[in-house]
Image (cartoon, rainbow, N blue to C red):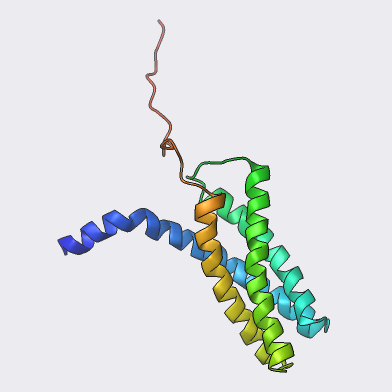
Length: 160
């Protein structure tokens, strides 16, 4: 039991960070797949256009959630820099999804909703792995100084 406790203590911050990242990712996933299907199946737009719109909306949500919850303890290097890098890296992750969807539709010639949704899920999986690694490395960097969890205690003086 002591081994498990030490292991947890060593990786607690990573476990909590992954849990938060996963929560934001789960909501973004629901947004992405819901919007993708709305445009693909509901409005009968093409799978590539549907994917770009869905990813743009879900990535905006994910940026806000990750900046202000998942990685709030990390240094903030400026909203403009973070926002640019975040969406640049999401654009790269979007390419994973577009490649898988394009391969499914144009190479395998599978045009049905189920095949395109499976391709979307595979692309999301690859993109998620890339995003987690790249966000930690370039967007939400490790703090150079410890960020206090609580405000410092101050003495209350009573003047009489």
